Image (cartoon, rainbow, N blue to C red):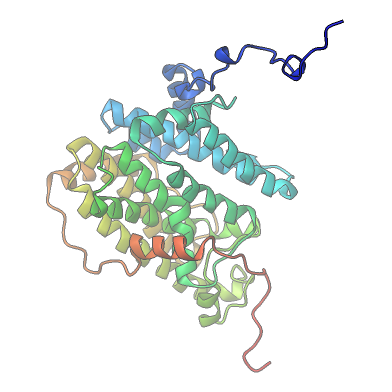
Length: 360
Protein backbone atom coordinates (compact mmCIF):
# COMPACT_ATOMS: atom_id res chain seq x y z
CA UNK A 1 0.00 0.00 0.00
CA UNK A 2 1.45 3.30 -1.05
CA UNK A 3 2.13 5.82 1.68
CA UNK A 4 0.62 9.27 1.03
CA UNK A 5 3.11 12.08 1.21
CA UNK A 6 2.67 15.10 3.52
CA UNK A 7 1.82 17.12 0.42
CA UNK A 8 -1.05 14.73 -0.33
CA UNK A 9 -2.42 15.05 3.22
CA UNK A 10 -2.79 18.86 3.13
CA UNK A 11 -6.45 19.98 3.53
CA UNK A 12 -8.06 20.93 0.28
CA UNK A 13 -9.89 24.23 -0.21
CA UNK A 14 -13.61 23.99 -0.73
CA UNK A 15 -13.12 26.06 -3.87
CA UNK A 16 -10.06 26.44 -6.07
CA UNK A 17 -7.96 29.41 -4.97
CA UNK A 18 -8.03 30.89 -8.43
CA UNK A 19 -11.78 31.63 -8.13
CA UNK A 20 -11.63 33.24 -4.65
CA UNK A 21 -11.92 37.00 -5.07
CA UNK A 22 -12.37 39.98 -2.74
CA UNK A 23 -15.99 41.14 -2.39
CA UNK A 24 -17.12 43.20 -5.36
CA UNK A 25 -17.57 46.88 -4.52
CA UNK A 26 -21.20 47.87 -5.02
CA UNK A 27 -21.86 51.60 -4.74
CA UNK A 28 -25.03 52.17 -2.71
CA UNK A 29 -24.91 48.62 -1.41
CA UNK A 30 -26.16 47.35 -4.74
CA UNK A 31 -29.39 49.36 -4.54
CA UNK A 32 -30.56 51.46 -7.45
CA UNK A 33 -29.77 55.13 -7.01
CA UNK A 34 -33.40 56.10 -7.65
CA UNK A 35 -34.51 53.80 -4.83
CA UNK A 36 -32.03 55.44 -2.46
CA UNK A 37 -33.19 58.90 -3.54
CA UNK A 38 -36.83 58.10 -2.86
CA UNK A 39 -36.01 56.83 0.63
CA UNK A 40 -33.89 59.93 1.27
CA UNK A 41 -36.60 62.29 0.01
CA UNK A 42 -39.10 60.72 2.43
CA UNK A 43 -36.58 61.00 5.26
CA UNK A 44 -36.01 64.74 4.85
CA UNK A 45 -39.73 65.38 4.35
CA UNK A 46 -40.44 63.74 7.73
CA UNK A 47 -37.37 64.92 9.59
CA UNK A 48 -36.99 68.59 8.67
CA UNK A 49 -39.50 70.69 6.78
CA UNK A 50 -37.10 73.65 6.83
CA UNK A 51 -34.24 71.74 5.22
CA UNK A 52 -36.64 70.08 2.79
CA UNK A 53 -37.85 73.49 1.63
CA UNK A 54 -34.37 74.98 1.31
CA UNK A 55 -33.00 71.92 -0.48
CA UNK A 56 -35.49 72.32 -3.33
CA UNK A 57 -33.70 75.50 -4.33
CA UNK A 58 -30.54 73.56 -5.21
CA UNK A 59 -29.87 72.43 -8.74
CA UNK A 60 -30.91 68.80 -9.17
CA UNK A 61 -27.48 67.12 -8.72
CA UNK A 62 -26.78 69.07 -5.53
CA UNK A 63 -30.31 68.52 -4.21
CA UNK A 64 -30.09 64.77 -4.68
CA UNK A 65 -26.72 64.49 -2.95
CA UNK A 66 -27.98 66.68 -0.09
CA UNK A 67 -30.95 64.34 0.39
CA UNK A 68 -28.69 61.27 0.44
CA UNK A 69 -26.43 62.87 3.05
CA UNK A 70 -29.39 64.01 5.16
CA UNK A 71 -30.82 60.46 5.21
CA UNK A 72 -27.60 59.15 6.78
CA UNK A 73 -27.43 61.97 9.35
CA UNK A 74 -31.09 61.43 10.31
CA UNK A 75 -30.70 57.68 10.60
CA UNK A 76 -27.55 57.98 12.71
CA UNK A 77 -29.36 60.37 15.04
CA UNK A 78 -32.32 58.03 15.42
CA UNK A 79 -30.16 54.97 16.06
CA UNK A 80 -27.94 56.82 18.56
CA UNK A 81 -30.98 58.04 20.50
CA UNK A 82 -32.89 54.78 20.20
CA UNK A 83 -35.75 56.62 18.52
CA UNK A 84 -37.55 57.10 15.23
CA UNK A 85 -38.32 60.70 14.33
CA UNK A 86 -38.63 61.84 17.90
CA UNK A 87 -40.13 58.77 19.62
CA UNK A 88 -37.81 57.59 22.37
CA UNK A 89 -37.15 53.90 22.99
CA UNK A 90 -36.26 52.40 26.40
CA UNK A 91 -32.89 50.94 25.45
CA UNK A 92 -30.36 53.43 26.82
CA UNK A 93 -28.22 50.60 28.19
CA UNK A 94 -27.42 49.67 24.60
CA UNK A 95 -25.98 53.11 23.77
CA UNK A 96 -22.43 51.86 23.27
CA UNK A 97 -23.60 49.08 20.97
CA UNK A 98 -25.68 51.51 18.93
CA UNK A 99 -22.70 53.81 18.37
CA UNK A 100 -20.56 50.86 17.36
CA UNK A 101 -23.29 49.87 14.91
CA UNK A 102 -23.11 53.35 13.35
CA UNK A 103 -19.39 52.97 12.78
CA UNK A 104 -19.64 49.45 11.37
CA UNK A 105 -22.49 50.29 9.01
CA UNK A 106 -20.81 53.51 7.87
CA UNK A 107 -17.53 51.72 7.12
CA UNK A 108 -19.38 49.04 5.19
CA UNK A 109 -21.14 51.73 3.18
CA UNK A 110 -17.84 53.47 2.42
CA UNK A 111 -16.38 50.12 1.34
CA UNK A 112 -19.25 49.66 -1.09
CA UNK A 113 -20.75 46.75 0.83
CA UNK A 114 -24.50 46.24 1.45
CA UNK A 115 -25.68 47.37 4.88
CA UNK A 116 -29.35 46.28 4.81
CA UNK A 117 -30.24 49.90 5.67
CA UNK A 118 -31.12 52.32 2.83
CA UNK A 119 -29.81 55.37 4.72
CA UNK A 120 -26.32 53.88 5.08
CA UNK A 121 -26.36 52.62 1.51
CA UNK A 122 -27.29 56.19 0.55
CA UNK A 123 -24.22 57.44 2.39
CA UNK A 124 -22.04 55.07 0.40
CA UNK A 125 -23.54 56.52 -2.76
CA UNK A 126 -23.06 60.19 -1.83
CA UNK A 127 -19.62 59.54 -0.33
CA UNK A 128 -18.38 58.34 -3.71
CA UNK A 129 -20.05 61.18 -5.61
CA UNK A 130 -18.95 63.98 -3.25
CA UNK A 131 -15.55 62.65 -2.06
CA UNK A 132 -16.64 62.19 1.55
CA UNK A 133 -14.13 60.38 3.76
CA UNK A 134 -14.23 58.09 6.76
CA UNK A 135 -12.65 60.86 8.87
CA UNK A 136 -15.54 63.19 8.02
CA UNK A 137 -18.03 60.50 9.04
CA UNK A 138 -16.12 59.72 12.25
CA UNK A 139 -16.21 63.40 13.23
CA UNK A 140 -20.02 63.36 13.00
CA UNK A 141 -20.45 60.01 14.78
CA UNK A 142 -18.31 61.33 17.65
CA UNK A 143 -21.11 63.82 18.35
CA UNK A 144 -23.72 61.07 18.53
CA UNK A 145 -21.43 59.21 20.90
CA UNK A 146 -21.30 62.19 23.25
CA UNK A 147 -25.09 62.33 23.33
CA UNK A 148 -25.34 58.59 23.96
CA UNK A 149 -22.97 58.97 26.93
CA UNK A 150 -25.12 61.67 28.53
CA UNK A 151 -22.27 64.15 28.10
CA UNK A 152 -22.51 67.84 28.93
CA UNK A 153 -20.04 70.70 28.29
CA UNK A 154 -18.01 72.23 31.07
CA UNK A 155 -16.64 75.17 29.05
CA UNK A 156 -17.63 77.22 26.02
CA UNK A 157 -14.85 75.46 24.14
CA UNK A 158 -16.47 72.10 24.95
CA UNK A 159 -19.76 73.43 23.63
CA UNK A 160 -18.20 74.54 20.35
CA UNK A 161 -16.39 71.23 19.89
CA UNK A 162 -19.69 69.43 20.38
CA UNK A 163 -21.39 71.75 17.86
CA UNK A 164 -18.58 70.98 15.43
CA UNK A 165 -19.15 67.24 15.73
CA UNK A 166 -22.93 67.29 15.31
CA UNK A 167 -23.28 70.14 12.81
CA UNK A 168 -20.06 71.87 11.77
CA UNK A 169 -18.67 68.62 10.35
CA UNK A 170 -21.93 68.13 8.46
CA UNK A 171 -21.49 71.62 7.03
CA UNK A 172 -18.06 70.58 5.73
CA UNK A 173 -19.66 67.52 4.11
CA UNK A 174 -22.30 69.74 2.51
CA UNK A 175 -19.54 71.92 1.09
CA UNK A 176 -18.17 68.83 -0.66
CA UNK A 177 -21.70 68.02 -1.85
CA UNK A 178 -21.79 71.48 -3.44
CA UNK A 179 -18.47 70.88 -5.16
CA UNK A 180 -16.12 72.91 -2.95
CA UNK A 181 -12.54 71.64 -3.56
CA UNK A 182 -10.80 69.69 -0.79
CA UNK A 183 -8.05 72.29 -0.52
CA UNK A 184 -10.31 75.37 -0.27
CA UNK A 185 -9.90 75.75 3.48
CA UNK A 186 -11.58 79.16 3.59
CA UNK A 187 -14.80 77.85 2.03
CA UNK A 188 -14.74 74.79 4.29
CA UNK A 189 -14.34 77.12 7.28
CA UNK A 190 -17.41 79.10 6.23
CA UNK A 191 -19.42 75.91 5.69
CA UNK A 192 -18.46 74.82 9.20
CA UNK A 193 -19.58 78.22 10.52
CA UNK A 194 -23.05 77.66 9.08
CA UNK A 195 -23.33 74.28 10.78
CA UNK A 196 -22.21 75.80 14.09
CA UNK A 197 -24.80 78.59 13.72
CA UNK A 198 -27.58 76.07 13.11
CA UNK A 199 -26.65 73.92 16.10
CA UNK A 200 -26.40 76.88 18.48
CA UNK A 201 -29.87 77.95 17.31
CA UNK A 202 -31.17 74.41 17.91
CA UNK A 203 -29.75 74.37 21.44
CA UNK A 204 -31.38 77.72 22.25
CA UNK A 205 -34.77 76.50 21.02
CA UNK A 206 -34.66 73.02 22.56
CA UNK A 207 -33.44 73.76 26.10
CA UNK A 208 -36.71 72.63 27.67
CA UNK A 209 -36.99 69.46 25.58
CA UNK A 210 -33.35 68.60 26.26
CA UNK A 211 -33.89 69.11 29.98
CA UNK A 212 -36.85 66.72 29.91
CA UNK A 213 -34.56 64.14 28.28
CA UNK A 214 -31.88 64.66 30.96
CA UNK A 215 -29.58 66.72 28.74
CA UNK A 216 -28.10 70.20 28.99
CA UNK A 217 -25.79 71.85 26.48
CA UNK A 218 -25.26 75.09 28.41
CA UNK A 219 -21.66 75.05 29.66
CA UNK A 220 -21.34 74.43 33.39
CA UNK A 221 -19.09 77.48 33.63
CA UNK A 222 -21.87 79.65 32.19
CA UNK A 223 -24.34 78.28 34.72
CA UNK A 224 -21.94 78.92 37.61
CA UNK A 225 -21.39 82.50 36.42
CA UNK A 226 -25.17 83.00 36.36
CA UNK A 227 -25.61 81.43 39.84
CA UNK A 228 -27.70 78.60 38.40
CA UNK A 229 -26.97 75.22 40.02
CA UNK A 230 -26.35 72.58 37.32
CA UNK A 231 -29.57 70.70 36.60
CA UNK A 232 -31.83 73.52 37.81
CA UNK A 233 -31.77 75.92 34.85
CA UNK A 234 -35.43 75.25 33.94
CA UNK A 235 -36.77 76.11 37.39
CA UNK A 236 -38.98 79.25 37.40
CA UNK A 237 -36.73 81.19 39.76
CA UNK A 238 -33.85 80.92 37.25
CA UNK A 239 -35.78 81.94 34.12
CA UNK A 240 -34.42 85.49 33.97
CA UNK A 241 -30.84 84.26 34.24
CA UNK A 242 -31.56 81.58 31.64
CA UNK A 243 -32.81 84.21 29.20
CA UNK A 244 -29.43 85.96 29.42
CA UNK A 245 -27.57 82.69 28.73
CA UNK A 246 -29.78 81.94 25.73
CA UNK A 247 -29.14 85.44 24.38
CA UNK A 248 -25.45 84.56 24.62
CA UNK A 249 -26.08 81.41 22.56
CA UNK A 250 -27.99 83.36 19.92
CA UNK A 251 -25.23 85.98 19.75
CA UNK A 252 -22.73 83.20 19.00
CA UNK A 253 -25.08 81.76 16.40
CA UNK A 254 -25.41 85.14 14.68
CA UNK A 255 -21.64 85.60 14.55
CA UNK A 256 -21.11 82.26 12.83
CA UNK A 257 -24.06 82.83 10.50
CA UNK A 258 -22.64 86.21 9.40
CA UNK A 259 -19.29 84.56 8.66
CA UNK A 260 -21.02 81.79 6.70
CA UNK A 261 -22.66 84.37 4.42
CA UNK A 262 -19.20 85.47 3.23
CA UNK A 263 -18.55 81.93 2.03
CA UNK A 264 -22.02 81.53 0.53
CA UNK A 265 -21.30 84.48 -1.75
CA UNK A 266 -18.69 82.35 -3.55
CA UNK A 267 -21.16 79.59 -4.45
CA UNK A 268 -23.15 79.31 -7.69
CA UNK A 269 -26.42 81.24 -7.53
CA UNK A 270 -28.85 78.40 -6.78
CA UNK A 271 -26.61 76.93 -4.10
CA UNK A 272 -26.15 80.41 -2.62
CA UNK A 273 -29.92 80.96 -2.59
CA UNK A 274 -30.57 77.63 -0.87
CA UNK A 275 -27.89 78.20 1.79
CA UNK A 276 -29.11 81.72 2.57
CA UNK A 277 -32.71 80.50 2.76
CA UNK A 278 -31.78 77.89 5.36
CA UNK A 279 -29.76 80.49 7.27
CA UNK A 280 -32.69 82.93 7.28
CA UNK A 281 -35.10 80.27 8.57
CA UNK A 282 -32.85 78.96 11.33
CA UNK A 283 -31.75 82.35 12.56
CA UNK A 284 -35.39 83.47 12.57
CA UNK A 285 -36.07 80.63 15.02
CA UNK A 286 -33.13 81.63 17.23
CA UNK A 287 -34.11 85.30 17.26
CA UNK A 288 -37.71 84.43 18.05
CA UNK A 289 -36.51 82.42 21.05
CA UNK A 290 -34.49 85.39 22.25
CA UNK A 291 -37.42 87.78 21.71
CA UNK A 292 -39.83 85.57 23.67
CA UNK A 293 -37.78 86.01 26.85
CA UNK A 294 -39.00 83.94 29.80
CA UNK A 295 -41.87 82.54 27.70
CA UNK A 296 -39.57 81.03 25.09
CA UNK A 297 -39.99 77.49 26.43
CA UNK A 298 -43.69 77.50 27.24
CA UNK A 299 -44.09 75.84 23.85
CA UNK A 300 -41.78 74.85 21.00
CA UNK A 301 -40.84 77.91 18.97
CA UNK A 302 -41.49 77.46 15.26
CA UNK A 303 -41.57 79.58 12.11
CA UNK A 304 -44.79 79.51 10.10
CA UNK A 305 -44.90 78.51 6.44
CA UNK A 306 -45.61 82.12 5.30
CA UNK A 307 -42.60 83.26 7.34
CA UNK A 308 -40.45 80.56 5.73
CA UNK A 309 -41.57 81.66 2.28
CA UNK A 310 -40.66 85.22 3.26
CA UNK A 311 -37.23 83.97 4.35
CA UNK A 312 -36.75 82.31 0.95
CA UNK A 313 -37.76 85.50 -0.88
CA UNK A 314 -35.35 87.58 1.21
CA UNK A 315 -32.64 85.06 0.46
CA UNK A 316 -33.22 85.56 -3.27
CA UNK A 317 -32.44 89.26 -3.01
CA UNK A 318 -29.57 88.59 -0.59
CA UNK A 319 -28.08 86.13 -3.09
CA UNK A 320 -27.97 88.93 -5.66
CA UNK A 321 -26.21 91.36 -3.33
CA UNK A 322 -22.71 91.47 -1.89
CA UNK A 323 -22.69 90.32 1.75
CA UNK A 324 -21.63 92.72 4.47
CA UNK A 325 -18.43 92.09 6.36
CA UNK A 326 -19.31 90.62 9.79
CA UNK A 327 -19.38 93.19 12.58
CA UNK A 328 -17.52 90.62 14.67
CA UNK A 329 -15.82 87.49 13.36
CA UNK A 330 -16.41 84.36 15.46
CA UNK A 331 -14.09 83.71 18.37
CA UNK A 332 -14.08 79.96 17.59
CA UNK A 333 -12.60 78.89 14.28
CA UNK A 334 -12.75 75.53 12.53
CA UNK A 335 -8.97 75.28 12.68
CA UNK A 336 -8.89 75.85 16.43
CA UNK A 337 -11.68 73.35 17.05
CA UNK A 338 -10.09 70.73 14.78
CA UNK A 339 -6.74 71.14 16.53
CA UNK A 340 -8.41 70.44 19.87
CA UNK A 341 -10.30 67.47 18.43
CA UNK A 342 -7.22 65.87 16.85
CA UNK A 343 -4.83 66.54 19.74
CA UNK A 344 -7.11 65.92 22.71
CA UNK A 345 -9.40 63.26 21.27
CA UNK A 346 -13.07 62.92 22.23
CA UNK A 347 -14.44 65.28 24.86
CA UNK A 348 -14.49 63.49 28.19
CA UNK A 349 -17.91 63.20 29.82
CA UNK A 350 -18.35 64.88 33.19
CA UNK A 351 -20.68 63.82 36.00
CA UNK A 352 -24.21 65.22 36.07
CA UNK A 353 -23.68 66.59 39.59
CA UNK A 354 -23.37 70.16 40.94
CA UNK A 355 -19.89 71.58 41.20
CA UNK A 356 -18.59 71.96 44.80
CA UNK A 357 -18.66 75.42 46.38
CA UNK A 358 -15.34 77.22 46.30
CA UNK A 359 -15.34 77.45 50.11
CA UNK A 360 -15.83 73.71 50.63
